[in-house]
Length: 66
Image (cartoon, one colour):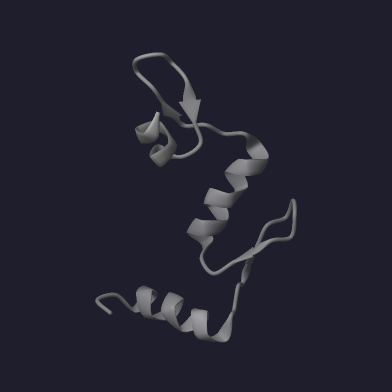
């Protein structure tokens, strides 16, 4: 691994450790980034906007598919 943080995340897959817990639904995650991504479900945040029609999306991949 080129970064120690990547090794730590990888090691947590073996221990099934998920220290980052959603305060709304209780679902747990291996990284704070994954928790933040998940929390968008609860806030209805849609930061990715189509410049053609103005429709907003939660994930960039959804915008690209659109």
